[in-house]
Length: 263
Image 1 (tube, helix red, strand yellow):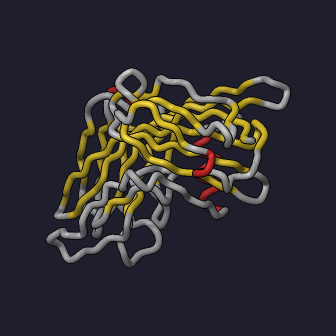
Image 2: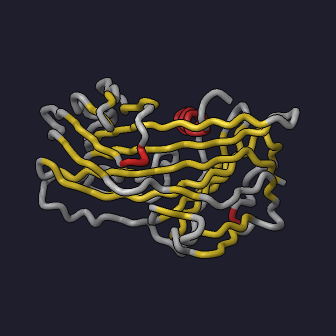
């Protein structure tokens, strides 16, 4: 597989519908709509690739530094390993369906193209482990931004199964030994075919300990061989900062993904 699972997920989410399930015991981190400005922004997902996950309100944009690492098992038993880094930026308004123009955008001094009406996205080579420094020149509607999200990057060092059964569910452990530099971990199980994508989402604390996602929670997913199922863990952390009396969210996100069979 030449590209990370991030690229596959992004294409699938744009063109096909998906179904969401989440752990009802863990509420998403809502921001109450109580900003003093007159702006009331549309709810904005915190994570990339999880359009129905946790949201923030009254946020004019999100700037995501992401590291993606994936392994795909081919029919012949061979594996293809890929690892990439990305800078992604979105700037939106409640009355505008497309992205707002934000001028020139850079992450760690690398330009992130931002065509008007589209999100910014670019694979980058600068190591994100040293931090994520964003500079946005701004426009008539987006203020200039200069912000460094310092500190370590989210990591998951535990294991992921290559086979999942609904009878056994998915067993994972999130603690200081397996998750670092993250507040939460999103678990995504996706089955992809030529016509659609069906997905389970669940978000857990990075210190939740041993967890089991029971098969009843993703029972609606069809069976899949190891070329069409993906299990992805997304440890992440985020912060917000205001510029020009407008709030923006800065995200550090990792994606660790394996192809899996699902029965």
